[in-house]
Amino acid sequence: MALPVSVATWVSAPAVSAAFGAQDRAALQSASAHGSRIAWAPSVVLCGMGLACVLGALVLPEPVLSPQMALVFAVMLCGALGQAFWASGYTVATLTDGPALSFAARLIVLAGYLAMAFGQGAGLSALGNALAYVVAMSAGSFWLWMALRRRCGVDTSAAVLWRDGGLLWRTF
Image (cartoon, rainbow, N blue to C red; front, side, top):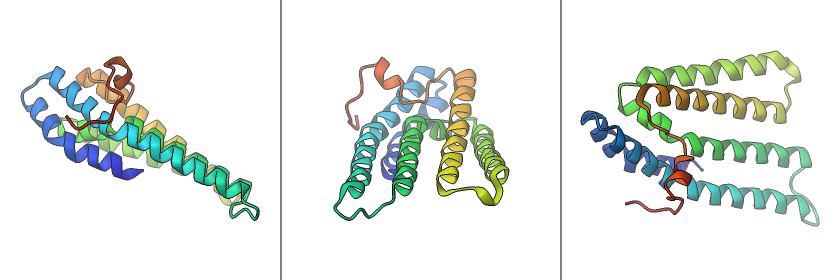
């Protein structure tokens, strides 16, 4: 699921950079939404396919996954979908005057994950590890989204797609 996010970054980066250079907040919002539009729909499809495969692996005559591992995969897939939802934030932060915000968001992720992992110690299960990772990643991305809204007045989440009616995948 990282591929749609990577493609969105590659495609939207020039527009994000140009909009910031021109100090055009509307163009920056549009460039961010463009990245979200590219990343979101393929990520939803890939997550759905992944969840279907996990479910399928459980219902085979001889299941290839335990219910616990299936839950771990489902949590990780949903976490990846969450990252696709917040993906434009890292692009906007890095290509504008906010690299320090991007760095701070990654520190939040690292500190949050380590706190949860060390809090559980040796008793940390695979599911606990997956949940700690997804919660930490989501917290860092949410914090970055809030910081960019405050600093630039730009919504870098995929939620902007519902507001402008642009849920369809396109590169223009």
